[in-house]
Image (cartoon, rainbow, N blue to C red; front, side, top):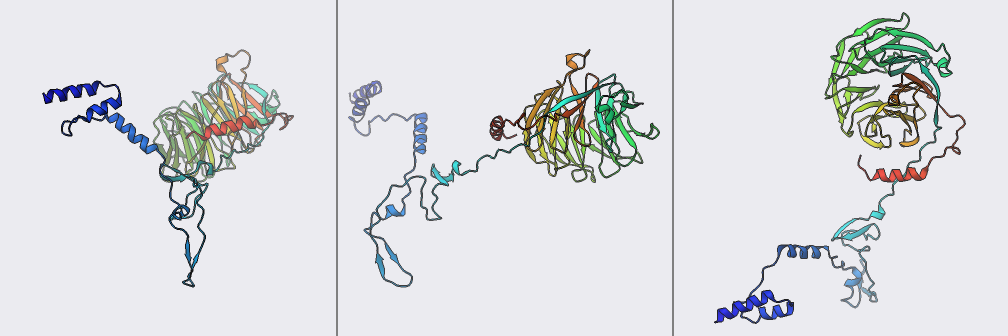
Length: 469
């Protein structure tokens, strides 16, 4: 009978709706027969979390400690006489004003969260918005039509008297810069034939009257511009050669191609000094420098590699890009460089490859980039879009689009090569509509007619500061 009564009371306790009634039923029995329900682990954990989120009790300050005593006694080091002071009136303490025994008081610089002293967000330094330099907008000046294929490469003579263009029609054309800038009919000086595939790389030698060309026919040629003949061949590439660069101080030639390596050649003896292997895809762009890293390569495997020329080994690999890197550019006034891909442009420290910032906004496959001494960076896209940037801050001060020449398809609106002349006042682009376009700055523009939109620039800087890359 006793057990039956206990079971009836237990079932009654389980079905009771009121907590008061349930507690009365539970504790009417003896301690041995009392029914204690099991605790739910989820409810228990939620209770623990609530207790953790509660603010801890305020730290007892010196003023609060004085409540227990009627007076504070200060003992001098010179005398043993105790000077009695009046009781200090206790004041209300806050979490932001704490007195600790281990160091000085931290009023506004510290705040207490969860029992841990951390830096206040208000004490952090505010974001600095860089002020971009004003640059005049660029406009189309002249269009040259002579090639029968895409214009894939451009190079300027060190004397700034002429420039060369390489095309998919397998020819290299030399132009008089002054006559070409005004659209003179006799601007074309010379046409060199010898390649059997598109010409993808051009470079003038600053020391000799030589022109170096590279093409998709695996050939690298050295032309003597006094006799207009090929005097040297550099054999070794296993596939098409996509880029070419000369060392600024040494008689060294660097080429990169679809065989995923960059080859370093002795210009005079035609011997291959190094094979810079490590990329997993086409080497599409090369930069050469007089200081380490003396060679920088960008590849379709989305990486940029910095090379030690003396050892022939890689120093640093940069993997920030998500798309193929088709263009590299470096200025003459800074030890930095910029890489261009379909995702964005990235600004790097050249010495150690440290990432500085991203230039976002050019939503196209960036095929070509160039920078002049005034700090104007231009990027040309596969859809004919051209973006002009302030190099130091990354401010996009102009966005324009190239216009195809009559008779061409809209799909041929692509910029494949871009180069500034020696003065930086003329920009020459090679395009897929087989034309060569010469751009110049608008002389009538000023900072009043074309002001910098600082409101949009500030919003963009704040947005980019919250991103990692």
